[in-house]
Image 1 (cartoon, rainbow, N blue to C red):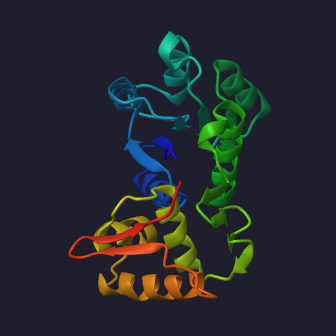
Image 2: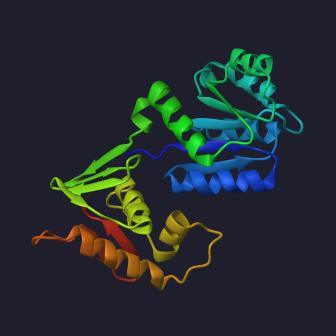
Length: 230
């Protein structure tokens, strides 16, 4: 499965960090730009799958960024969700008329933003918005927070769920403890690297019932990998 990439364009440091943290938890690759000019440069360098774009930005406004992107053939269909403190209907209409695919007024919950992102990706790029992942005999529903193996319901704690979700998005790829800490716990949370071993152990115990094989491979001196057919 391709991991969708999102560019967050937001000049408010605290909000940009919060959005990056929560969207990475949802399994997206996230880059951040702090003004409209930087956003356009980043899009030229590597086009994301979706942009979360603040209206009020230094140098080049969000509306102008949206207008320019819609004016280019290569970015004409790039999904854009606009964030703004403006709640007036005329402003919302202006944002949508400029080419935004959706519009969210501050303050908003990160849960709602994640839902809007999934909805836009489902509508515009359906292959990037898998809510349900299937790898071998494992199935994970990332919206309903349900896991099954061979049809058997598996009950996981929130950390084990995020850990399995991350591994299932990258089957066969080996992740170091440090990489898993960043992806599952967040880069700004201090947790001992050995904590990963504890949670991998709990995940294995939950997944291996009735003589089932261990789907998680330990790679000596390297880390962990989900070893199932994708």
